[in-house]
Amino acid sequence: MTGDHYFSPQPTTADVRSEIEFSVAGRDYTLTAAAGVFSAGRLDPGTAVLLRKADLPAPTDPGPFLDLGCGYGPITCVLADHAPAATVHAVDVNARARELTLANAGRVGVADRVRVADPDSVPQGISFTQLWSNPPIRVGKAELHALLARWLPRLAPDGVGWLVIARYLGGDSVQQWLREQGWQVDRHASQKGYRVLRVTHRVH
Image (cartoon, rainbow, N blue to C red):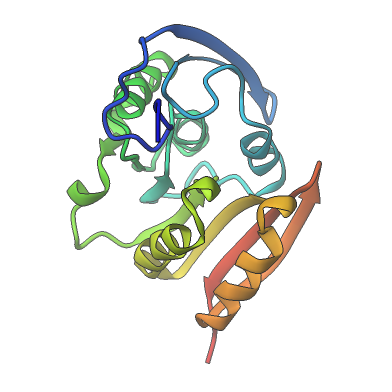
């Protein structure tokens, strides 16, 4: 295995910065990305579909929210901006991604409500009202299943998880696997080859 992947804990790629501009729900954002971080050249198409099609939190929603695999922080910044009462926990194994997320939260003016951490540093006792993720499909099926099995149980009883997965990368098989694990999974939307899945605790 040569070179960095966006799931490398410590990227060795030169830290070349770029500016990413995008709009969500009528608000414009300009964030800084960098080489060695997921989708450094543009807002990832899957993330764009997720932010466009999933139900953004209400302004009064207190959270806390989880952005799982935050990258340079586009989902974190949008959630914190749209829900000014909420705390957003931004989790990534990539140290450069975490640094960028914190800096971008500062640019958007929400850094006081963003908690950036590696996966092992998130306080154990927290349950999340919402979990958002464009999960790292390319880590492989076993690692992806382990990731979701670790974090989805931390949804509050009435919490909701929003996932976006490319159909050609197994979006439908992930949906089936989650149902087999006992989750309620609804295909909330499909666009540009991506599935937006809404995941909740199954009501018994």
